[in-house]
Length: 78
Image (cartoon, rainbow, N blue to C red; front, side):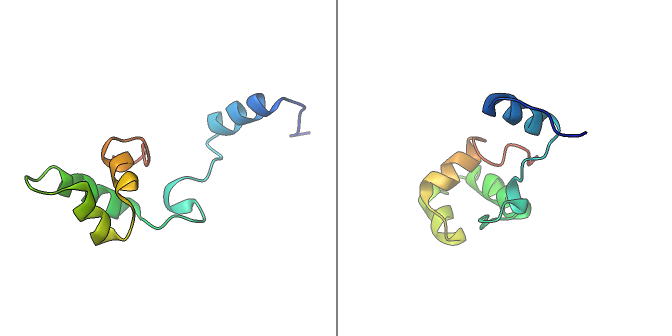
């Protein structure tokens, strides 16, 4: 009864509307936690702190840190 036919797009919209997408720490391959994401954003606001410095500190790539501070990734973390 809970299943219905739909296109891939319709299924994606339904998944997102029902918040059934694993994100953040709940995502299997996640290396970071919400607390670390908040710390990255706080630290980046300080003078002299670069993306590469934070990337090295948290063992992720600079593009990952860039996406976090620009809120492209981990959007749900306040």
